[in-house]
Image (cartoon, rainbow, N blue to C red; front, side):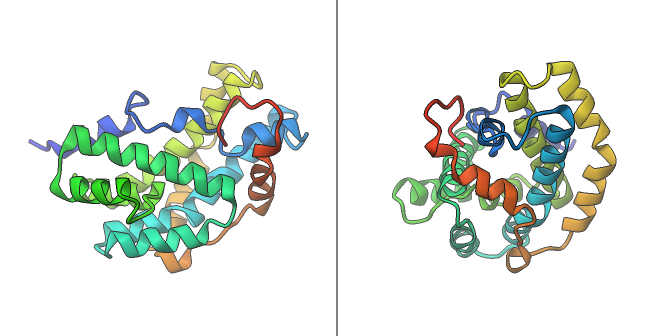
Length: 221
């Protein structure tokens, strides 16, 4: 019996308390500033977000999953995230994900690191924490990376629905249309480590950085 598959599926469940539903990944600001207006604009935005996750975030997951000391990778991720908005979102989601995994799975490594994050000894960024959790739960690295890619796109599309850009069926269709791109991004991210992380979508980062300047906001980032 492979009990680890159930931990993987639980992490995939949108009901898992990760806090991701309150973030739009820069989409809300992009809409408000006119960078995303049409379905085609949204498709481009989602594809860019997918590649940003693959090449700019998953390397930190890989590094921790491979056995590098989590605190070292976490600190490197903290330096990599220059945008205050993106950094705050990563900390909020990483902390929520780690707390949820600690309460639900109870692995000693998670409990210990969660205590350190709560004590502010370590940052607790999202993708290093996903690497830590998947390693502790013995989830295969490729499955953890697939989860990261899917979750990042799902979060943006969910935000698009709540922003009334598209409906839920259209969101599902758009995610399905990106299946080949998902596979390409997964292969491109394979083997990347923290030192390889790169920002492939400065446009999203720049617009997201202005999120807190919005007078009315539905999302935190």
